[in-house]
Length: 223
Length: 250
Image (cartoon, rainbow over all chains, first blue to last red; front, top):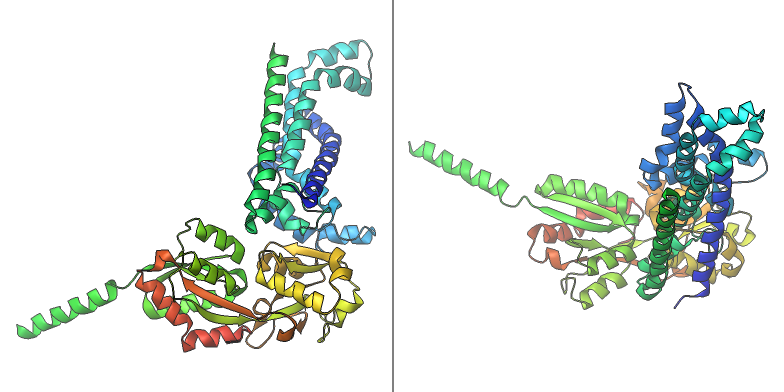
């Protein structure tokens, strides 16, 4: 059966995924909008940086985060100067890592949604004398709604499934950095296979339901 | 004519001698023994012509992999219970077990002056993070927890503990400065009889159960002369000198 530590890991994982998704939607929206509309020469480079976490092994991301957020790294020196202290081994550190790690899963669906809107609705809004912000909130946001749902669900689910980055920068602290995937790993390592099964099966069911939900929505919006 | 024939025979004998024993042996090695094992393997390859393939990791993980059929032929564990368990379960060759090194625990900081040579820093507790290896799976982690209990600081320091997946990751936490100090294997910060840097307290052996590190030949290596040769080599004088130079006892 599942223990209090397991439930603590589940709660922490959901908190991490929720905070990460919220931050990603705020950061990801302008980035995706820029990527969808720009003719800048930097479009390719920025798009590639956003997509990096798709192809890099999580250990590479985790290792560089550990070094750059450490006391001698640029981010670590900045956070120390700001009086925040060091980010590794803290919930805030996991959020920073997860935001980077799940970035493409939020930006790319948003970018596609924005591109699909096309010029026409924006031109119509402009002839009706809507300002840029007004256009964005009353035309773009409603039209891109399915894209936002997909982005939020994928960002959330991908953060729940994160392992390598958390293992490298988390330090495995109960209720602070020990998420479900790390807890499963611990159980397997300690040969506690029954406990590992409970959590693993939960992850399988959760992931299946998320993907099922996404497919349903896609069919719904296609109709 | 006779001389030529003899020469040819000689050459053939030499060639076949050199060709026959060259074999590969794959070894699972506890993470704390990484550096000395790389040196020993290189010497062994040069001396025998065999090829050694090394995999490094946590002893608990290797146990799970080996009992699920991982094709390792020799296992250098970080403790003496895991090889014994494998032998009982019939996954290791009975009677092939031996102690190849006795580990030393060290409290280490990458910065000079942080750790005093009596470990008083633990009682003062003036640090944010103390790194240990996962005590559930890594023997050095279990030994570190025993030391904390013995010193009566286990509860006070519990909120400051960060846990590495194995002793190598624990070293990374401390070496990168993210944890101010941590319990490591002496071999990780010790070369040729001195510290590689930072400050350290060599934990007295009586504060924890001895870190007897046993090796065992696994079922896959039962009929492999190369596996047996490497096991013998580990007990030889050349290996002993290398093992000692990293701070292990014998």
